[in-house]
Each structure stands twice: as C-alpha cells, then as structure tokens.
Image 1 (cartoon, rainbow over the protein chains, first blue to last red):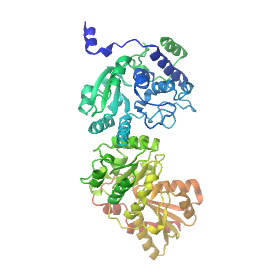
Image 2: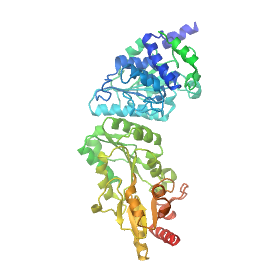
Image 3: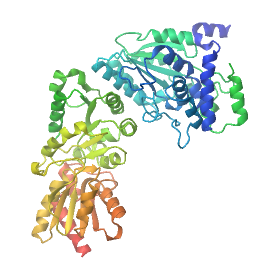
Image 4: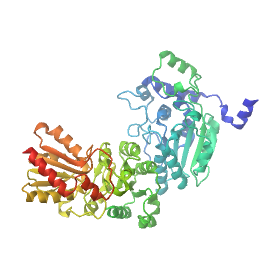
Length: 283
Length: 310
C-alpha cells in the first residue's frame, strides 16, 4: 500500500519499459564505452530519453549545417554524460557512429567531455561543472537581441547544481525573464560519492527554481510520452525561463547499474561485462 | 583611464551593433547614456562574476563582442575557471576591462589588489594581456579591440596618470614601443611603470648611465622580436612591473632570454612586488614606494645592478 500511495503521488517512480529506440541508443553508448574502455555510463544512461525526445521531437537543427543560425541551441552542461550526447548526435547524422569506437583515443574526435571546436553539433565545451546555464542564457539573450526565435535548452546534473555559479545564472535568467531558455535537471539522485540527499541535499528543489523566477514542472525522465507532451508545451510561461525537474534513474536500463554509484564512471570493464550489457539491451 | 575606456566602449557600441556591455555592480551612473540609448545591449548583472563570464561567452558565440567591466581582482581570481574554459578554450572575442590593476586599491587591502593578474591571465592559451600606460594610449588601443581575435584582458590604472605615451609612436597590440633609445641598459616596463622608468632613465643619464626604455604594453603576446633585438645591444635589462615577481613581465622576459639566447644573454634584474601579500595600506604611490618601485628607488637599483655587472 505504501508503494502504491507513493507511486500515485510521484508517478515517475514507475517508468514504462524501454522501447527499441531507447535500447538502440543505449547500445550506441555501450559502443562508446567499449571503444574507450571507460566512460560515465550511469550518467549517460539517465539522459537517453530526454535527449531522444529533444532531438526527435523538439529541437530545430540541421545535421548538415550544424552552425545554422536559426537552430535551437542545446548544451549538455553535465559534460560527463557526453556518451549520451554522442549517441544521439551520431544517430542523427552529425557524424558517423564509428567515431564512438575511438572514444577517448589519442586521435579520436570524441573525448571524455564534449568539445565544441571538434565535434559537429556540440554547442559548448563542458566538463567543468556549473558553466552551461550561464552560456545558455547568454545565447538566449543573443537570440532576443537578434530577434531570432531560437530556443536554448541546458541539461544539468543534480550533483552539478551544487555549484554556486548555477544559482548566479538562475538569478540572472529569472531577472531577464528568458522565456526562450529551458533548464533541465537530470535528477537521478546520485552523485559520485553517494546519494545527493546525503552529499548536499537539494530539496526542496522545485521550490528553489520557482523562487529564482522559473516556471517549473516535474516529469518522469524515462517516460517518452510524458517528456514529449511536457517539452511540446514549452515555454511553460512566456515571460519566465522554464525548468524541468526530470526524475531519472542513474544507469537506467541495466539492472546492475541502476542506482549504483559504482557505475557513475567505469574505467575497467571486462569483456564479460560488455557482453552482459549488450545482452541486457537487446531489443 | 577607466572613463576613457568606457566612453570608448560606448562610442564603439554606437558604431557597431556587435558591441555589448556587461558590468557587475558598478558605480551609480556608469554608462547611463549607453543604457538609455541601447538598452538591449547594456547589462548590469550584479555581483555574479562567474555568471557574467559565461553569459559573455554565450553572447560571443552568437556574434557579439562583449566588453565586461569590474574590479580587476574579481575579474581574474573570482571567475578564473570561467575565463579559462568559457573564454579561452572557446577562443571567444570577449574583452575584460579590469579596474584598478596592481596596487590601485591600496587603501582597501589585499582582497582588492590585483598583483598577480598578469601572471594568471598570461598563463591561459589564446588570451591577450594589455596594460596601457595612460588614457591617451588607452584611447588608441580600445578601437583596435573590436577586431582582435580571442579574449583580451585590459588592465586599467588608477586614472589621472601622467600621459607619457606619444601619438606619433603609434600603438599596435603585441608591438612594444621604444620610448627612449638604448644605452648600456634597457628598462623594460609595462602599464604605469613606464612613466617611472622614463623618470629613472633621466636621472640615470645624468649619472652617466644611459638607459633605453621599452614600453611593453602588451604582456602577451610579448614582442619577442624587438626584445631579442635590443637584448643584443645592451649589457643589462631591468624589468619593471606593478605586479608580483612570480609569473609576470619579468618572468616572461627571463624565460625569453633563457630560451632564445641562453648564456650570452644580458644580465637581468627584475623589479616588482615580492611573493607575499601586501601588509600596508596608504596609497598606490605609498605601496610602490614600499616595494622600491618609485623612480628614486629604481634609479638606485639600476645603479647597483650596473655596478654588479661591471
């Protein structure tokens, strides 16, 4: 009964099963992990449905013209989740999936954090945490001055928003009433050391963003239909920046990795583990 | 110098729609005309230096040329990672106008002194570092910032500094200006220390020690060609900077002489601020005197140096 009551009030506790597209994107991420022999798998897996819906249904872009002025801008501020971004960019044809095989290689294009100068489709070089929202709001202000209808979406990690710079940016975005800016928090409840509630508790998180001038909604970050409906309703209010608290599961899709801090970053991965990952992601 | 630079940013903004201004929490009335005439390109964002640098980066990615202004130490130490990653790694044309470089804020103590700004800005790839000597040189420099590639750090002096730069000698970023022809010694200075070098050179000439004065307004990229050329003509070089001796102009010159000339390089004396936080207040001039960086002490140091090198 307790469980049912909890689910009724917080429906994201039970996500629908992953469909074939979500599994295929996760296999691309594992391909990168295999190529580099390392990677932030858990951090990338929590992002997949958000990235998928953004790139399938929401963002305006042209893989043949990555710098097209009228495009929407997307910044993965939690740069360590880059394998998720690389998977969707490869899927969309910004570059060939074979680049994943050279993830983190000396002469590879795709490094352990995304770099704008090297990778088509990457708007900003991130990895140092707490930078993306400020850059994104600068881009949103630029669009306003230039009278472009481009939108800016920034995904941050929950651990990332420990950074004070994020809250400086939130103050600023609220002040400027940037309706063309959306901040998404990948709230998988785990940071590197332990649960976010233990390391640096973020609650009450929606209240925080709301008090900084954002229009805030929560969603199950693995529910494709719910994400699509919510993202299509952006901006939530025309004269406020939007914030989405996206409830996710770190390592989503792999039983051993789900909610397991040991899978935040993997640097030693055996052939057996890789085979098991691929097997679990069959679809 | 600050007024000159900000007035010129306003003029540049009137001529060029790419120019935007971002301040932190500057004095009341700063650039009111800019705000009134071009409100969509004027930003005053409060004491949020990390955010301001990221925001400037975002604007620059979209074709704008942001001029960011606040106190030097808060524009360097406070947001160093943003300067490094958002500006330098992306190589974006953001201009950092840093009030009160060096010892200008002497009465306010070490939290407000920017005495390692040249070192830490110089350490970043893609960054240009400039310290003009006076407001007239600033006026020649600022228009050139419009089309410089990459980020630029502009160190402002106190204001009301004696004008020693000369229009006929011109101004080009990266090109040091020979203000006085070399003798046995070359005094190599940046910012407001060039004025003090010129005064010291005058006294030294009277004492029979002829010193040239090279004004290295651009600390990065250093005018290596000219310094190496002059190094071949003198017995000694004395660097003068309102800056810690760790990593600034003197260090840059030392590296250059060592790497490019080696054992036959002229002797080098580096004058600057010792590696400790200032423990006195007073005025900028008081602290420069305390550290032996006023003309009289410079003259004495150069005399001793010449005596040592024989």
